[in-house]
Amino acid sequence: MSVGQLVSTQHSAVERTYGVLRALIRLGHGPHQPRDIVEVCGLPRRLVYRRLQQLIEAGLVRRSPGLYGHYELVPLALHVHRGQSLIAPVSGTAEVQSVLESLHAETGEVVMFHAFLSLGATRVCTDLVGESLALRRAVLRNPAGASALREAPLESDAPGRVILAHMAGPVADQPEFEMIRQTGIARSAAPLPGWNWVSAAVPPQSGTTPETVSPIIGAVSLLVPANSPRNVSYGRLLREAIQSLGPVSPQRHLELVCA
Image 1 (cartoon, rainbow, N blue to C red):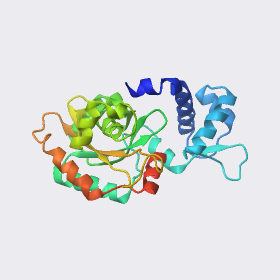
Image 2: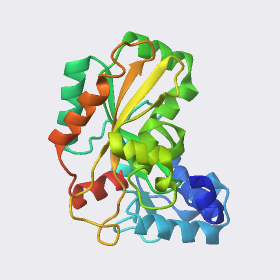
Image 3: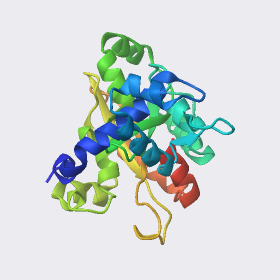
């Protein structure tokens, strides 16, 4: 059973909520009146109010301080999505950033961290370290692929699948995800032709349960040329790097989700 099938009864509601979030992103920084949000997203006003309340509860939107009836994105939500760049300049945690930098120094590859965005079951890149001329050319040739590096449904590729494998539910019980949990690694083609993902999950706080803290976690991934002879050995490096990172605390974890 796919994630899409599991959430099929809630799909339209999720899309509407995400549409309101997108409208606020397009409107940009600062307070906005509901009528402006309605105009951008095209939803009826009553639905916009309902979705705004859900976004407030999710920590992505707030009522503008001192300005009655206006709404704005919280700063992290704005930073993650602003513009059309491959990655916005906002960091998850200092520990995550250190691991990304260490992996890049050892491999010379581009390293990315993806957090989980609950609206739409999506992975969103919040950190990137490294760059290469070959990757820059690939991004310029394929803007859609570059956008999917930044944000894509969880089922699309290794970064999302390694997150899915560590979430509670029927999907995680499938053999593919059981194998990911056993090996600690997921591999797949990346959205850009000629590039592959090698991904590992950042674990939640040890001793927590889905009842006490959200099971949502992130993924650290190497973006590797498909013809690289080191594709296999990179799995070991990723596992060792994640072990050095240790568990993400619930507070930091929730910050990544809000991002």
